[in-house]
Length: 70
Image (cartoon, rainbow, N blue to C red; front, side, top):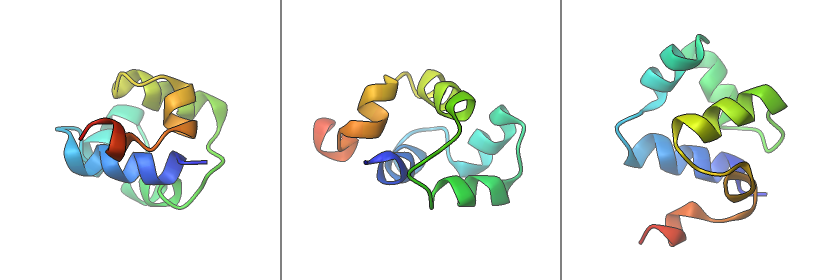
């Protein structure tokens, strides 16, 4: 599973950083930190993150996005 690595990559390499993602999702910055340390996010959170970053859920979970975008 690549979820936490991909979320770290996306928050560092797009205009939607951790603070902005927390704001969009309506959660605390600390909750984003928790997401960055899990490979098992809630389904509704996973769906929202995939929509925000325009990435499929499958790619978010199964591909190393840092290698896909280089």
